[in-house]
Image 1 (cartoon, protein in one colour):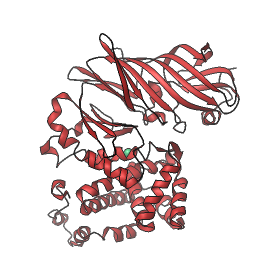
Image 2 (cartoon, rainbow, N blue to C red):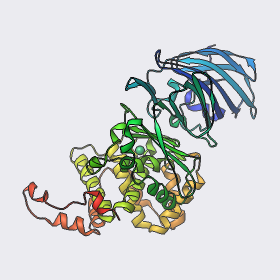
Image 3 (tube, rainbow, N blue to C red):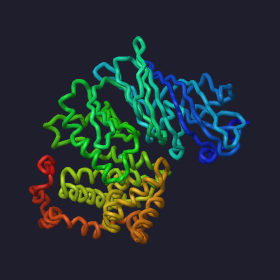
Image 4 (cartoon, helix red, strand yellow):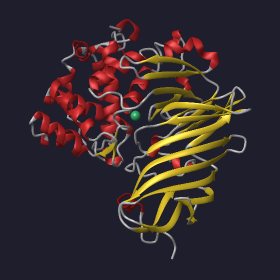
Length: 471
Ligand SMILES: [Zn+2]
């Protein structure tokens, strides 16, 4: 019998609960290889004779369970382990492996030095670390990485110690809470860092290239204010031990909210003069908001993606509102409206709960849905519901129903009409959106400019530059 004939991917989470993963890694950029030893602790929920770990294109030299060699089968996507696993027992598994990652871990040259960084979401951490791709199996990940001592090595969690050898340093990072594997990350490069502390005492480390010290202030402007704002607004303390932000070359997105370690495109490292044209403020706030919405509570599957992107977009906007003012806030909602209407006109609109919805829908319609929900149930109820929702599902996975049920309980309102209008319908409730937008005088004035020539709206004073709007 081939291993795993009776076990499909969807079922494993009902059979095994992975609790923790500790790994020691050696990364060799010249040959694009990762050597590692990984220790897992897992509990068996139902008797079984095989389990698997996602491991793409890896080779395994040793596989031990509770210090005994076990049979395994490697199909280059998963490694299958054969043993008689008993319900309620906790097992310790050790794997030695080498990976040749073609995705998810990238080697880039910068100023003739290596930069190594990861992108787990949509790319799968199991390309470089044998792990569980299913985001519903959260576990505690502790990474320990050995690398050339002239480099900085950055990973999720708190740096507990560094062991210095002749030419290398072993960096030990500690996580204390579980997360989904797509949020595991590391970044290696030549960096300096600026350290801040949030008002409640969380260390915030802002990395930058040694030649970029003059860009640190404009790039990371408002970081502490936004951090403090989000903790207060969300009502739940920042869930992790520390927070780090690291710019990298050739990044695939604007930024990625790995747990306690945001990696972002170094295109956002800007000087004072560039701040007005392009800055990192929105991405900074967005990735930070994900530390709660996405990382603390994580969607069960793509149908509920707005619980991550809609919330991160909305809370970033609230953080910016606190800095730049109401006109800025409403102006952004107004521009989101125009984008959503253009999408509708092009026949590309979907419901928010469609797993194939566009980014515009997940992010911007998602943010709008929250803006309208808050108007409907009131500020106090909305805040209380979000807090209850995060506390109830902390370190777990969530569906839209989980969130809506909490809002209904807290507000005492029946949200059926809201669900139909905002979550299930493809059509934008554009009249209701404009009623809300017109609460802002600037938007009202802008829309009142009555002419058929596009150009005549261009002279309108939009709520920019942001600098002048700071309050
Ligand atoms: Zn996001």
